[in-house]
Image 1 (cartoon, helix red, strand yellow):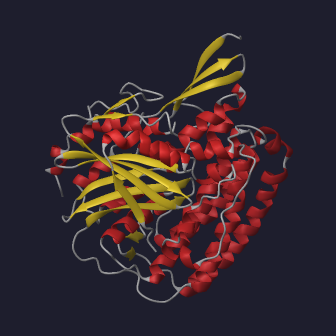
Image 2: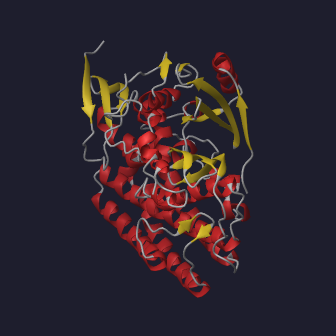
Image 3: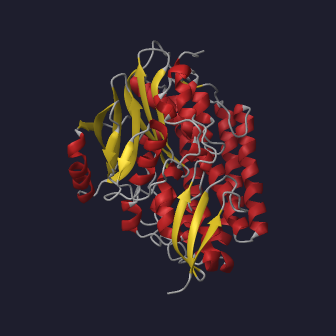
Length: 123
Length: 359
């Protein structure tokens, strides 16, 4: 049996209000994750309430990777936001804890945005 | 106000098999704040989906963790199977639960041993791992591997266990359970265990929910949250209820795991009793095109696989949110206000797997 998954597309300006509303409704934050697409960066905010999956999705233009932090609503979000910054180069403003790019001790800057080399070495 | 001191905890510490660092802000002997620092062993495994075909990526998924490797494989496989509309044969689903629950038993026994060691209860540590060894022997007999055994694949499982062997293994597991029962009584009733863990590292039900706690960490605070109740695989046909404690302290987290071991033994008995005959795998045709968030219950809690296929043999995205990552925020709440001497026991109480977290 596979669970039904509802994913709602929103824009950046709606993010804080939507997340705040989910928090008030009693949703738990599950994860925040990014996916690089050809023309944008897809950002997924995933929530759960009584085993019901609910997702918010927004697309960021590749030339302007900026987001407001939702860690004021869900403190745990700041860990995912630091991860977004270190792996995808997303600038997240207002994080509850900002590791300043040192959440992951990696040498490459935003390695998950520069996957061309990996893509050409498929086995 | 007492003078504030910052004490570094980790990344190398006797209770930590893997590196995590905490800056502990102390007033006298009391921790007032803890600031986490991970990232010492980030491996970038998620990027390997650009190099490995979706069929090979299961080997990567299994290597995210050296303890709960099998269930990582199940989570990944289920995601691909959903995208490709693959109906996994029933026998394969039951075998996945068989090895999955054995994995939970071996993981919890490993944790119980480490936790006993962290409070200086060496004999309890040794007995926990002695019992665990018998579970690893079953893995070796049925799959050829003891930790990472590659039994799961997209579409089903690679190996079968004949019904006579399954019945014999149930008898062996009855003996292991009886052996474990003695240990469980010690964890439940021993003075030292109670004294070191009761009312230590408390996180309330409301805090656990707000901070996104998962697994035994959430259930010990009274949250009824067990992803197996989603009914994925054969769990839909098995009877069980999430194990809940309400104290929210280290002792409660230990008790959830102690009781979940009995639950896993029972689930395995149900699996063997209901094991259907039939195929082990469905034919996988074509390449995945679409997306899915696959969620399954690891010994440490919910793991999330986001998979996105583009119609080629390589996935566009392979993203994993592991349970320890979700439990870092609750850990910081547990540490605030605790005694400095209790920090190792509290950190260990979430059963941290940094290898998973860093993936």
